[in-house]
Figure 1 (cartoon, rainbow, N blue to C red):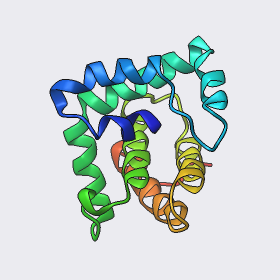
Figure 2 (figure 1 turned 120 degrees about the vertical axis):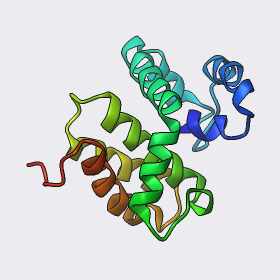
Figure 3 (figure 1 turned 135 degrees about the vertical axis):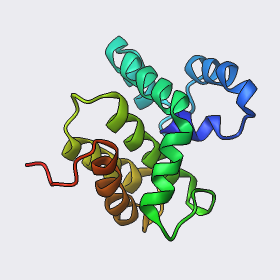
Length: 145
């Protein structure tokens, strides 16, 4: 999510280089000087998973953004909070590109990210849109158990 927010500041032709800068210079967040994020990025499995999500997000950006706008109806992507928009992009990427992850896990992780990094309204907003978005992108409107 932090990488997607970072990439929004760059033109499309600059994003590959910007992503490499992101990996090389982990941003500090939550006042910990980047310790938590550096800890996560020390695990090759975490980095591989993040890169897979970013690849799907990039390669299928138009499809994911279109699905988010169609699902959220009253909110255009450009009007959404940056965190909310990028958490929903992750929901889209994970729903399309990582079929082994259960929908309930995708949605609960999205809500957790929105609650941590977004506004006080982010978690409920993301929860509502993510549920419908994940179901739509997976072709499954029923609730998973």
